[in-house]
Structure formats: structure tokens, C-alpha cells
Length: 231
Ligand code: TYD
Image (cartoon, rainbow, N blue to C red; front, side, top):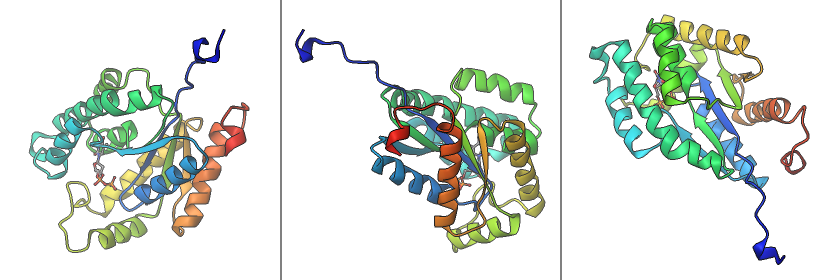
């Protein structure tokens, strides 16, 4: 049989890594640094974000972050986050993973659990039901939770924002952000196999090394995979 006629080996699925954390925890910087490192190791990687990440979801993002949807209440906000996620998963995340591309996503379902669930008091049963509809069996291979003291996060967010008005959630007070941090710590402690809690109160390079170690520990420590030799 000629090489051209041989069936191609099945494409290994990409890995799905989500980043979570409160305001000013440095997610976007760390996602970019990790993407650069993975791409340099010849692991095709894309970055994306929620809410948004696909054309349809970006429209919903505007509705949510402008604060226009706040008046509808946290249940309806949750439904809008779910609608955006559904489009994002179908249009971007699943197709990329199926092609063997690694997907790094800035926020995912844990954000809904924390912001709408823990803080907005939306019934966890509703949150789980929406997860079943929007993501089905898709689960992050790893969730990096970047942890910073609230004062540090708020200071960083303020610097980044400059003179622009705070968005829907940046405008909340200190106690909101304290509760947010606690809710993330609870998620990290409750699912240590999927989640890595990373101390993000340091310069970007130091935090990037911590993220890298977490990735290696979680994804490459047990099985020897094709990727291990490359990173
Ligand atoms: P964004 O401008 O992307 O900033 P950052 O992720 O750096 O905070 O803001 C997204 C906001 O939306 C953020 O305040 C968290 C919130 N959010 C939810 O409340 N629920 C969700 O499911 C998601 C994905 C985000």
C-alpha cells in the first residue's frame, strides 16, 4: 500500500484549559504567555474568552457587560451567559479540540457557578441544568484558578481600566470581591483533580512559571503522552 493510500491515524484531541479568577487576577496576560509557550512547543493552541469568543456570543457579551441585562435579574443573566456559551462551544471550542488544537479559555462554567450561583444566588440546580444543555460532557482538562488578594486585584483592575467606566461586575464593592475569592477557593478545594490554584500575587513571569508547573503536574505527571516529550 502506498503511503498516500494508508488511512491516517486518528487525530488526538486537543486539551481544553480554562482560566478563572477575580478581577485583576491577570488571566489574559497568563493565557497569552501559556499560548506562546505551547505554540513554541509545536502544540497548536488558540486563546478565547467568555462571555464571547464567537460572533453570536460577542453580541450577547455586549448586552451582559454593558449592564443592560442587570435589570432582568441574575436568573436571566445566567440564561444569557449560557446562550453565549452554547454558541461558543459549538462554533469554536469543540471544532478546535476535534482538530487537535489546544484551547485556552478566559473564563468558563466556573464563572457562572461563582458570579451567578454563589454571588447571584441562582439555584445550583438551574446552573447544573444549563451546563448540561450548553456543554454536555465537555469538561476542562485543567482549570487554572489565579488567586490574588482582593486589594491587589482591584488595584490592578483600576490601573488597567484607566479613566474608563467600570463594567457590570468591576463596579461591585470590596465585599463582593471577597466573596468571589472565597467561592473560587471553594471550587479549587472541591475539585483538585481538575483545578490548580495558583498564587498570582507576583510578577507575570513568576506567575507564568507557576502556571506551567501546574500544567505539567496535572496533565503530564501520570501518563507518558505524545506531548510530554515535546514540552
Ligand atoms: P471581562 O471584561 O472579560 O473581564 P475579566 O474576565 O478580566 O474580569 O469580564 C467578564 C465579566 O463577566 C467578569 O466580571 C465575570 C463575568 N462573568 C459572569 O458573571 N458569568 C460568566 O459565566 C462569565 C463567563 C463571566
